[in-house]
Length: 418
Length: 90
Image 1 (tube, each protein chain N blue to C red):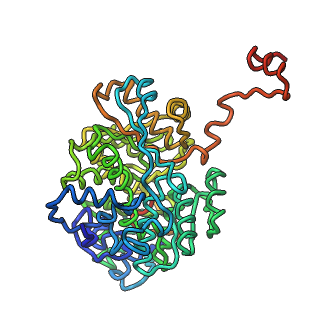
Image 2 (image 1 turned 45 degrees about the horizontal axis):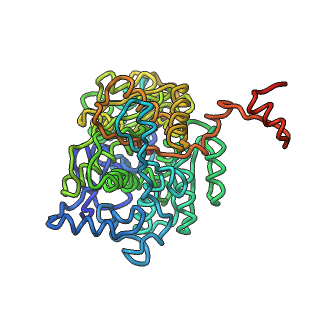
Image 3 (image 1 turned 30 degrees about the vertical axis):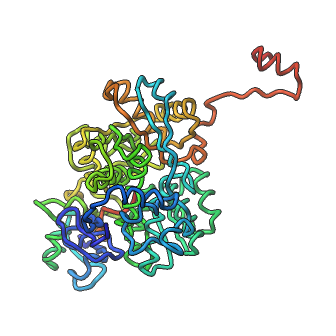
């Protein structure tokens, strides 16, 4: 499935496979288009995938690169950080708590820098190298900052990472450690994004989510490829995933569609349910109002990794939710904290605020009776709770005692006596 | 009002290669009309059915005009409009 061109999603104008993200005719987003292969041997193709490396390069045939990176196509895990092939965990205790039959957690916090962003950066960085770039850059709400800085370190590329100055400390520390040029911009993510959009026209850098965005976005398809492979080459009935720019959400739907079109997987396309925080819910609002356009908002609230007030792929996320028979919901900060606790207590997976949004949205769908009893549901957990520790601070108490048996019996087992 | 418009790289060829343009107008919409009267090709690239195309962002002194009054947003003397593609980020 070789990449053929960049094509405008709005007016279908075509461009070479360069570092370009905007249609010059109508400003629409460019997306990679592929040669449609003649697949005669589906079993052979499945075996080829299964024999590939334990990372996203097992799907290199469906990603927009001239050649998979690394010393050879089949040893690609040696190139850069090995993103992907994260666990799909059956979450029976979570399902039981929510009154559902079958829930699976796609735990993308198991990526090298603990979020799904390693997938997209890996693809963008590989393509950037093919195009001859020596510097990677990004506009980030935190997870992308970690991934870009780390991938740059692994590949020996210089990096410039732009973040809002009020980002969670854990995300700042887990970026700076890789030796990047870290730029804290006084403003919100949309301000950072505007600056980077301007800079990308003036610097010869590969901004992974600006001029490299068509390649970057394709990396998110691998979430769907993996889920389908892990379920035994089948689609789930429903996917619940977070929406910030809407890119991940849209590309998960695209990934399932591509594998179905190739005959690699069985089952209907899953219903796509999007999750936003009420502190920044332009896509959920547009969904509720029946609009096909998202009015920009000023983000507030604890879910900073989803705090994109002007979501680039908002219209396409709306389309994916509606077309699939899913929906888009928003949950508030208390629900997000409860979602983090619910996932932790029932699965042993500690997620960041974005995962709290997604889990709380699943709980909301279940409580509302939107999920049929026989459905197989996949919850996409995109990031690690260690990155947003403030969200769980002071939500539990610990017993503090001397190293004394008596104190343990009295104060822990017998309740605290002062 | 005299207003400066900053053009993204994607539009510069249609504006004689320049990165900025000096225009006149009391609102964002009037300033853009003034820009189009100089560089007619830009109208189709930026506008559709009398409004901004959905993937075009216009900032007035760093504020997205969609969060203000859109094309009706008043501009001040010496203000700055920045036109940028909307599809970045995330």
